[in-house]
Length: 117
Image (cartoon, rainbow, N blue to C red; front, side, top):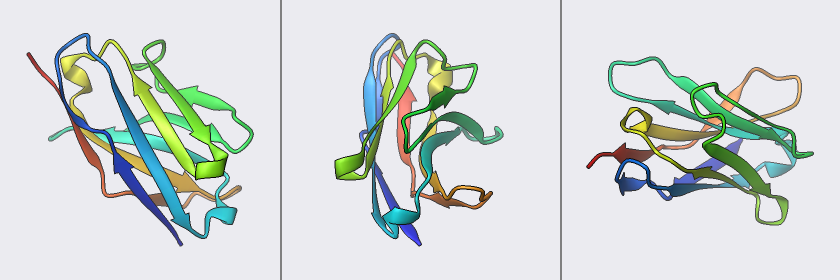
């Protein structure tokens, strides 16, 4: 079992930036990849970005060019740098981790991001 704790959410104006952090603990040796999902009220959960242990990253179409995912292996932490934020980015952001060849995801508790003037 892996425990994930997110931080860094908050209220930001359109065009602003935020950086989310996710720290992993527990059975961290089993982690193959980590990433972020988000969900706004009344909408489907959306995959935002993911990164493997060897640094390969991928992004959802709605955030490409604005968000950057990175990882610090020594700290067992993944970051999501969010730039040029838009009101439609408002959601609860969840950190996830997965093992190789597995469909199972471990989830954090979520952190709220609100983009509003």
